[in-house]
Length: 37
Image (cartoon, rainbow, N blue to C red; front, side, top):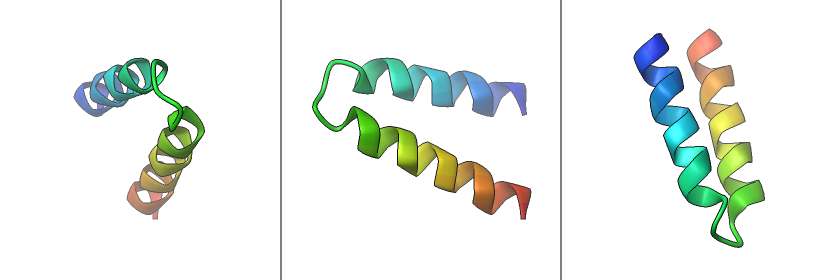
């Protein structure tokens, strides 16, 4: 679980420099929702 969180945080940090930051965040939230189900 911790490894996944670290990977997601890394993805968010990389996305901060792009215009698709909001889209990346939505994708991450969707991924969390799928895993929780």
